[in-house]
Image (tube, rainbow, N blue to C red):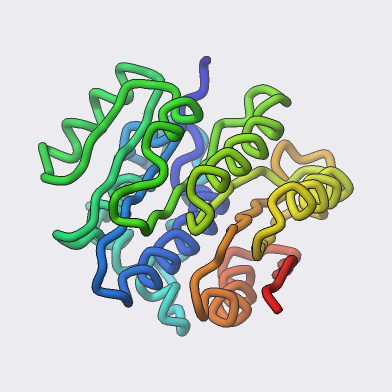
Length: 276
């Protein structure tokens, strides 16, 4: 696998994903009891982003940098901006990926396991976390490793599944991993990220997910190009299985504001399989 998230760190899709992740983590932390957080494709944890760096596209300038320069109103966007702004030094940015963002939100009663299949990236993540207690980094395949962790002894859990989608089969693997996770632990909260290219492909994927899981679903869609344009990445999707209380209500407020701040062309919130 050749994928390195350094090339895309802090772009609009990262902003979308991380605003949503922080909101779900905050929702779970409203209860005193601890939970397990699992990131199946964690990356190296932190990314040094510099203006004019010819080795990496400047996607972060149209993503995280816009939030840092803005004055967002919604609490979810303010939370994200505060975390990201702490990494600004001069005109550069040390951008925290999902594992570092989550590690900063976890309480002493919570645990985390981060999977990263590339050993060099996993080693960098261990160094970035600097031996924090109750956090483990595994240099292993996250799809396979997740199975051994569910159900967790805490009986509460959040799983982020966001593979690189270098292969078309990743869309199917995400489906299968979500279904297997729920068979092992029906109460798991799952956050599934996927790229938005053709809207028809997403609609088919979303319909299949609803039929396969039969659990409450919530989807946050954000696109910066029309969903069927020839851009490499038209948009970003976060699908949440078993969404925590009030997450949907908050999302319907912060997503339009985020779209406006990023200069996006559209957004949508979808729900399915709502409990009766």
